[in-house]
Length: 266
Image (tube, rainbow, N blue to C red; front, side, top):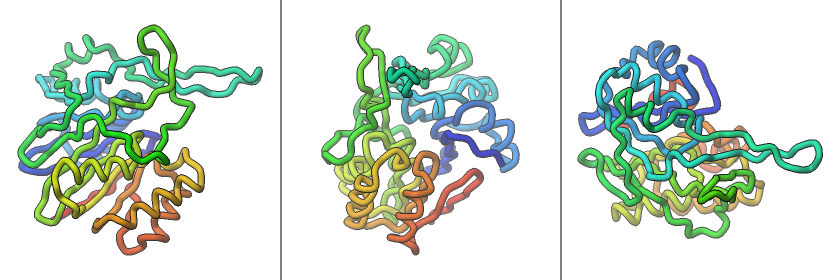
């Protein structure tokens, strides 16, 4: 298996196979899927959590493998021009392009049928996309180094285009996270609001906690303790520091989801 700074989850639920994000490039197919014996040519749908290259970078490769029209569920702002602002030696900023690296037209020529919605909706029975996630917890801010070019101006990017997947099960919700820019607690609370369910069979994916202060980390972990979850499996942008703290707080409910991790839920 190969690891990279990116995310791609294959979800098998409700008789469907859904690819949630596609990593940075061909690694999702050429190494990892093949080594796991997974054929990505017969998936039923793709969901792209948000318009960053480490989540959408492998989309063209997946579409090329499928060789047929495939629904790709996205937020309408997916193709905005997104940047990471890094400090320059002169004290200014250097902008690194971190947006989707393919044009919409090119992806459509490969078979992508984009389904764009901002509101919550089911993509298959029992499988829900949250749509745009409300920001209600003041401590869950978005890192200042993210930028977006909107209406001709370069502004701070709140990543309004990020959505998560919620799957209903008899044992509670399975919440799947891309990067969780809207905030882990905001996302959990919104999943509960949308479904009326308070139990979580599992919370799995990226949490973006590696970019935040110790204070923010502790606030998140304290808030996590309020929720009824059986398993939390972190990956991607969580970071070793946050992983250690979450493991220490919830030792019997924590797993670290590295490349190749398979989670089976009843």
